[in-house]
Length: 75
Image (tube, rainbow, N blue to C red; front, side):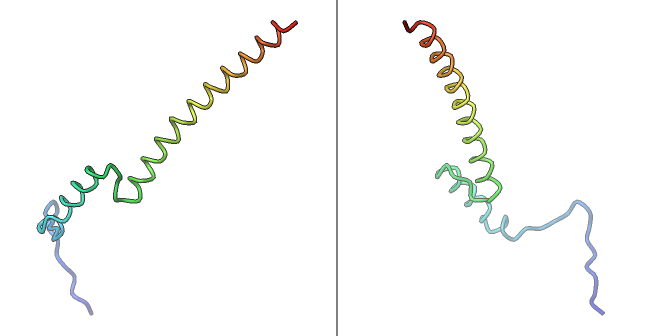
């Protein structure tokens, strides 16, 4: 039977943080402006699409209003 590891709550060790890999990835991500994690990229794309959808809706409603005014004013 395999031996169980005894873990102390609140104490952990990360070899990636100890070697500086996590910090290097974070710095690279900030310099590029593109998140390196999948969830970060999805969040960034979602934010951009959310903004563009709002702008498209505003422009569509303005376009509809202008078309209505032009129809009323046309002889």
